[in-house]
Image (cartoon, rainbow, N blue to C red; front, top):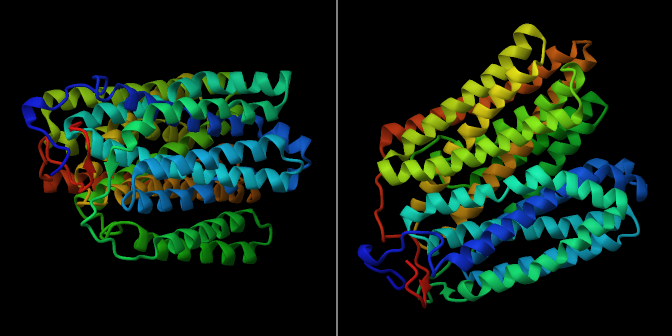
Length: 482
């Protein structure tokens, strides 16, 4: 296969001379996308008031999410058909356009258009980044690169809200969006030269498919689900939400690998582990912060420190799995997924049990649980990505990458949405806040149980490892990077 080399000549680091610029560019890309998401959470109340958009507040986030679903699937499709440089360049153009539209938006409706453009860009960047990791990094380097990619979220998580909030308060929320634009040029300079060396196999035929149409319909179905959860009339809310869920179930089956719903080893089960772990983590994070503020007796700032601690242990877990990989080898990846989920179950179970049994949110107990959960997701989620990329069918690195990201998006949006509906239901029934939060967090445990079953199936199947320098793509590269 073009672009491969002998095992003796294979690179030993993601920071060697062949990879340093590419690694830096990918990390910068993910960091910018992370900062963009955190910026939105920080400045949304300010810009909503300025643009008189309170009636569309939820869509400030939903417009990005739904567009990201489309961008993720389109990116995965196109990166298998053309040079990743073309897909990445299109993403940068969309991000630039979206930033300009958001920065100069005269009203909330125009602002939502800008957020949709940036959502598509985020989807394209994510699919391209994972595909490139699969094709330009040999299998034994992928855990380290995936750990580095996960760490790209840490600094924005720690410093992003403070910096963005200060800029918005001292100058304007518009400066936040316009201020990200200059970073696009160094991103392009770092990665596009290497991206251009990668071309799809000219002899491979790509059958026409309906993934783009399915992605659009999935965005609509997800939108219906989210809208239904916000409707006040119960009967209408149930009907709209069920229609959305039915559409999501039908379309996910066609967009994800066959066997996803049955947790079939290897690739489908690995994707389920990722989706369920990510969804469970965000469910718990969302309602843990609510608990600490509402009946835990701590300020928003103190609650934020706990979330920062989870981000740090997530990064630690990601790097730890890469180090363990170098010691135990790729054949132990299913064991590491089980270990990661076990840590998440212990941490989230501790938090859930505290609230359910004692109707309290003790800060240091919550902190201990959240640090465990962060360590577990860093250890297990990154390992699941390494398994998925190693098992990607020939010529379908992009499709596998988009499936991973799509699973993450749907697991998070569905889980948090259901949790919100359950919280609202509990409060409407006159339950206490701790009782309502217990109900809202319950889906996190269900998600973890499904993820654990998928991980145990992988462990039982003992998936074959594809040693360096064999890869599962049919892209060719003009450099011997592998």
